[in-house]
Image (cartoon, rainbow, N blue to C red):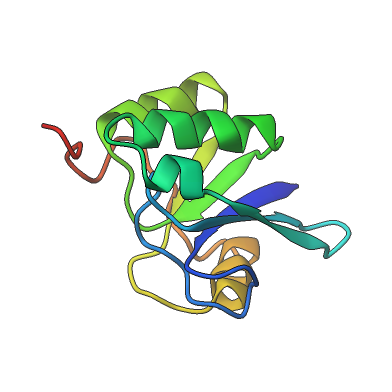
Length: 121
């Protein structure tokens, strides 16, 4: 399974970023092969608006099936749902390795609605 983890740095050893649309990096981890690759999200991070929707498009283009993050606004949530991408919730900052382990061990709840107000609401 391909899982994107929102991260503050380019490796799974870095702390996760709890904000989906404006996360500095998306780390695409393959749970079957154990490989992980960082993708810079700077263009979306610096967007004046629409960062969540643009980030959702980026994640969909990476082929992700799940996003592990701390918060998702309503527009990003709808865009991820439309792409068939599930959202697993991490409630506190931890290393990406810990977030991925918790996801694989089914310890993270899957969001059924946005858990953050949109930035421009």
